[in-house]
Length: 259
Image: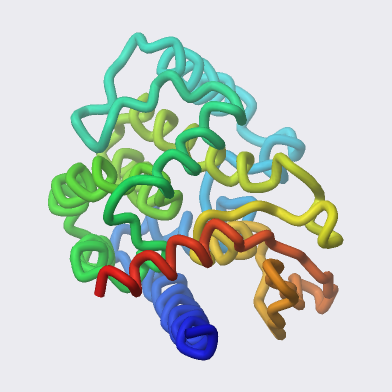
């Protein structure tokens, strides 16, 4: 049984890594110029992102635009606008505790699959996104996020679609969820040791966090309930990150039993 679970872990990790790499590369192919600029990093804090990141906030550029966006974000968080019907209402998500509870509650639900990036329904959203079909992305994401509201990368795709539509309030609302989920992952420690490991409910969360800091996984080793990753960042800098994957392993074992 242990051997079987180990095989399932490595197989899932390989699928997730390949899927993540392919999606990150292909998400830069939208024909719209402004979205392409966001995707290739010309107006972003990270090559995969766009307007509202730490580097941008500290750069002093486009102050008036930032003030407008932050105002819209506050209005959205206060519930003065709805999420335009995409996914569940997460407007109450204003702190780390909310998103941590959301993540771990979702992981306890019946049918939860910790390796979600290979799901066919999710692939449909990715295909629509790569094709630049914004309405299709929003429609498909509605059902997906109601099923899996903790998929940070889908929230990011939805935010980008709203950006193109000029709906900045809805864009900021989904960015709030995106960063709330990532902040929750990194809230229990610094990830530099087993004692301060990041707690994840899925290995897919590991890659979402690593991609956001512009990192690439160069090595991986399971040490008990911990996943130790060797990560290379831009400029050749490397760091070792530890993730507590106990919830993932339990959910994976449960899903294998069902099958």
